[in-house]
Amino acid sequence: MPENNDTIQEKDIVRLKDKVFRLSFSEEFILTAVQCVADRMNQELRNKNPLFLGMLNGAFIYAADLMRRITIPAEISFVKFASYSGTSSTGCTEQLIGLRENLNGRTVVVVEDIVDSGYTMQQFTKYLHAHGVGEIYISTLLHKPHATKYPVRLDYVAMEIPNDFIVGYGLDYEGYGRNLRGIYTLVE
Ligand code: 5GP
Ligand code: MG
Image (cartoon, rainbow, N blue to C red; front, side, top):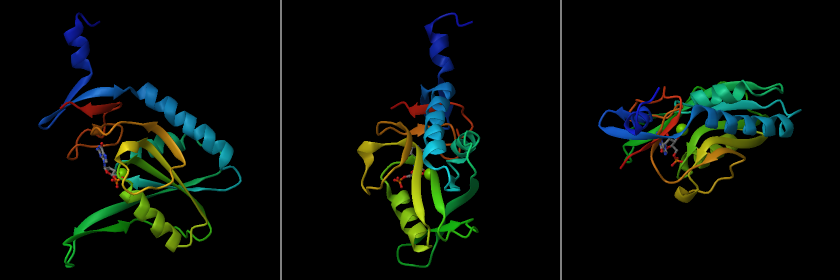
């Protein structure tokens, strides 16, 4: 049992490497938001036999919790944008790995952890269209509406957040914090 306010506050604080983060959303709160998204999908995507595509690494926990709440027939696979040092003048570029499914005519539901500038989702949407996808729905656990630089239609947003840096529930700070059950915000 907590004995004073210091103890309560300490419980909601995590330190990852050189940074301090404070709890913003509990696991219970997040799962309620995920259930709302799943309920809508179960209604709106029935008879579409959707292929869910989880974006690694950050979306692995959201994808697992979302998928277990999907009650209509659906498949899931995972893809990853891997940075590699290219020989081009730009020096560094991103390659999509992991996609083996035939996308032709499929209804694809992209499962992303967070949409910030929108760049990743805009690029991925173009890629999917170029590979003959029938319909694309984008689902993101988190959206930072005030960070938008590359507008993209988001069909299923579990939670909207301000322009702060967050970790937990799959999202990391320099590789750490993905295992936190809640979502934590960087304390400046
Ligand atoms: P975008 O391409 O929309 O600018 O950014 C998307 C990617 O940036 C996300 O998939 C994620 O990897 C990273 N990102 C953006 N905001 C945050 C944040 O607050 N915390 C973490 N951990 N990653 C973020
Ligand atoms: Mg991501």
